[in-house]
Amino acid sequence: MRLSDDKISHLSHVAYDALIKGGAAELSAEDSKVRKEIKQIVARYLKKDDEVDDAVRKKIQSYSKKVVEGTPEWDVLYHKHYREEMDKRGKV
Image (cartoon, rainbow, N blue to C red; front, top):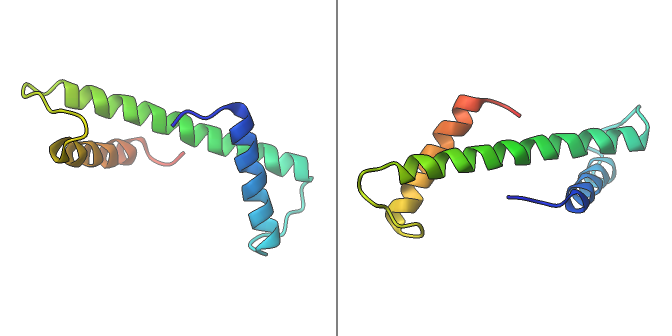
């Protein structure tokens, strides 16, 4: 999932607003610092997701039997390998 910097910034603002308005957190740092940290976390997650997606697609393409993207078989393999790759790589 590739997002522009503007969209990542928007997500950070939405997440920040949800934390504050929802009462899920009391923040002692400046608003801009918190939003910047949220933005960095989202960007790291998206980068990791892209890397995992690339690795999974390469793994499926390496099968001797051609598996067509969009088929139920491909979907099952993709989700299986995606979970394995995310587990291997750990948290963001």
